[in-house]
Amino acid sequence: MTTVEPSNGLTHRNIKTHQSEEISGHGRSLVEEEELRRWQKHAQKVKVKVLEQVQDQLSDLLDKALTESVQPFTQMLPTVNGKAAKNPSSRSQRMDDGKVFMARPSMLDELFEINHIRTIYHMFIAVLLIFCMSTLAVDYIDQGRLVLEFDLFFYAFGKLGTVTWAWTVMFAYTLLVPYLTLVFWGSLYHSSSSKLGLSLGTGLVLSAVQTYVLGLFPIFVVVDYQLPPASRFIVIMEQIRFLMKSYSFIRETTPVVMKNTPKEGESPSFPTFSSYLYFLFCPTLIYRESYPRNSHIRWKYVGITLGMILGCVFYGYFILVRLCVPVFRPQTNQPLSKRSMVLAVFHSILPGIMLLLLCFFAFLHCWLNLFGELLRFADRMFYKDWWNSTSFANYYRTWNVVVHDWLYYYGYRDFLWLSKRKFRTAAMLSVFIVSAVVHEYVLTMGFGFFYPVMFCLFAVLGVVLNFTMNDNRQNLVFNVIMWACLFLGQGVQVCLYCQEWYAQIHCPRTGNSFWELVTPRSWSCSYQR
Image (spheres, rainbow, N blue to C red):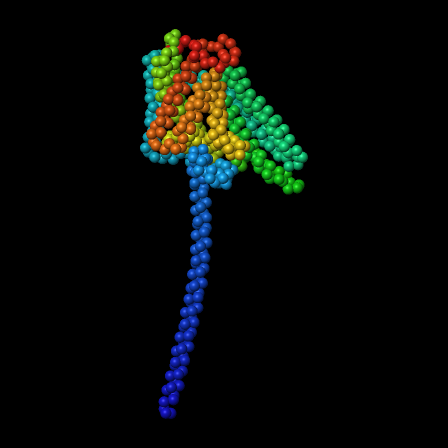
């Protein structure tokens, strides 16, 4: 028995040692597992935070990307099917939102990256070369020498000195008077005991001065100095631009001044003068304190764009000289017949649609992109893909986005705000009428005679087509119908305005009575071809 006891004691100690090692090893594994669980929880929290941040950033990016694409449809949706009327709060939110500016290129700049689209541009350049060659050939046959005469061109852009000083007067007024009026009114508004009286008085005085300087003064210059057509259009277009810009500045800044009451001892804050000066030249009619800007100016792009503008001017000159003047210049005393009228309209379709495309490309693409590049203005959405429109409602929204935005925010939307978002049809009609009147005013002052062809096509047929060919028309057949209507409309305008131009020359007015001024001379003048 005594020989066995030491062996039992040793075994017992070994068992304890082994058990203690197992316990310590198990403890370490528990600590490691606990630490692993803590790391897993921490990693899960980090994962959740990262996912939330990524989701927020993606949501912001998607909202920014979808804002402009959804805006045209949401703006006009209540007038199409009324579905948005089910949610008054969302409609109210949309009506209170303003235009969102973002950095984006013009659509044609993107399309010209495609070789197939750029080929169409090359085709138009080839046609211009053909016009030059035909003019040279005709001059050589008629005069025995090669010469490109630009008599009509120099006549149309004559008296540029008068245009320059008239523009300087309008610009100086628009730069100083609206801004100083805002500062004067805003400095007294919050301390005035009669805010309504101060606002009405200031508004009436500013309106009277605006009417005289930006309303009557350009008309006086155009009429009294007998400016030629192109010079007339420059003065009148700048008159309208300054009026729209100054109205947008006052319309956007006065609510901000009224809402931001300064603290005691502080003066009210106003927009900076430099931001207003920038706004007068940047290619938009909606005022903002700041716009998205590019980092640098692409001078090569500026040179190419300027060359395209000059090319478009000469392109239009050759279209008039080769396709319009020989047809409508009267040669005999033959009276105008139905047959000759119909033939003249269809003959005018080609030069009419070419002039339409030239005006679009020269002004809405080249001219606005030129100023946008020089001023590093990043939002180049001056137009959209109007050529793909299957409805005239979409065509009117996408043809000239710059003017459409001004009419929508200050015409259509303000009309709905005043009528408590009722009478949407009346709001749309009022915008159409105002736009038609302004278009007719420009043509009347530019040509020097009243012949409401544009007004009838715009305010009558345009309104009918806007409601009949609306956004519900998605079939591509309606795109063909839209182009056919544009072709015929341009043919009618070119034909009638050319006939009236020569009728005014060969059958001048005998008096200055009202009916003499508004009655087209081509209706009674027998000196027609």
